[in-house]
Amino acid sequence: MDYQEAKHKYIQAWGTLGSSWGINKAMAQIHALLLISTEPRSAEEVMDELQMSRGNVNMNLRALMDWGIVQKEHRIGERKEFFFAGKDIWELARQVSKERRRREIEPIIKVLNQVQDIDGNDEKIKEFKKVTSDLKDFSLKVDGVLDKFTKADQNWFYKLLMKM
Image (tube, rainbow, N blue to C red; front, side, top):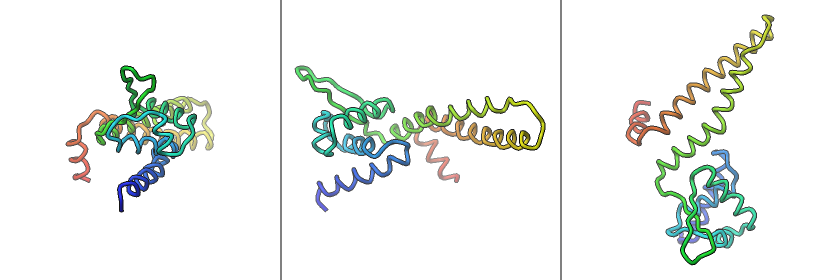
C-alpha cells in the first residue's frame, strides 16, 4: 500500500469513528488530516485535500476548535489562518472525554436532579423516581470516572486497565 492510499484509508476510517465520538464524519476527517500533517494547514489546503466545500471546512474547523482538539496559528505576512491538531493521543482522549462530559453527562445529571422533585405517591410516580434515581446514580459514577480520567496521567489509566 502506498502513502496516498494509506492516508486516504486512515482519513476515511477516522471519519467513520468520529460518529462514535458524537461528531460528524467531515469533522473527524478534517481532524484526521490535521493529525497526520507535518505542518499546520490552511482551510484551502484542507478543502483541496478532502474535496470539501469552504463552508463545510470552515464550520468544522471552528467546531474542532470548540472541542479543544484543533488550534489556529497566524503567520507573519500571511492573511490565511493555519490549523493544527496536537499529536499527543493521550491528551486528545482526555480532551474528548472532558468535552463529552461537559456536553452529555453534566446536562443529564442536571435534568435528573430536577425531575426527582415531583409530588405524589402512586405506582407511576414511584417507578419514575426509581428509574430516574438509578439513572442519576449511574450518571454520577460515569461522571466520576471521566473526571478522574481527565485529571489523571497515562500510568493511572494503564494500571486501571491492567486491574480489569
